[in-house]
Length: 163
Length: 156
Image (cartoon, one colour):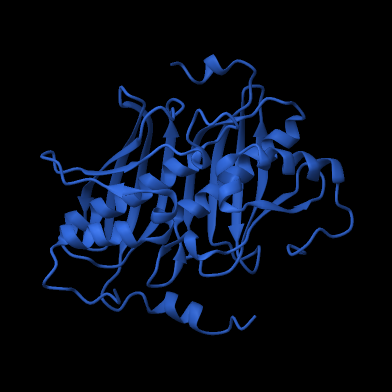
């Protein structure tokens, strides 16, 4: 990674690599689907017992949905940018319209609906069940780093934390 | 503030109640969320030990934002559950998070403040930090549905 653009790989390939190699996404089983005709970014998450929010494993835990929405929105921003620059989530809000049942994969459909020089706005629907009903809606704001803008974070983790 | 261990003054009943609540949340168990402190119902501090599989940004590196959010959501739900002293699991209606800085390799902690506890909905503020509670990595707020009938909030 290291922020250097790779001219050989398309943004699609980079997005897929990012989605597949992100440790948390791998840990819970996130998958990026192919770009659909509507231009929206789709990610899916197979129902597994450990992702549940109830002992009977009937419903996805809200935090699982948040993770999928955050990732899908981030990938939607990358696609809208057409290049792979570091982005940071500034904020995100999620409304839970209905419980997300675990009788089918959880699906996130995200789009970046506004892009400025430094800020991207994205939103995401989370669909659950065989009928793909909308279980939650997430809206987030992302900050786009300039090529040198991640320095403050690096210094924060590089020094002073010997323990 | 002592966030490393259960200091003196720990309310054992509250701690047990939170521990059993966490045990009943498969995803909280999967991530490894545990009780750091439980000094009375209002002061529940949850603790998430760092693991490489929780990383979302390998370049920085930093926790995935969804993991930070999950810890805060679990904190809001368990704090509400403990406060209500009932055996009905509360439900998350909405959740909003502001990321103040990225969360690097190191443990995470979260604590709640009950802004308002109504008959049907509780408004909860959540603070998440790594080294210093006064330097949070994220702030959040949630509405948690607490009433008996699920049909009020979750019209299916």
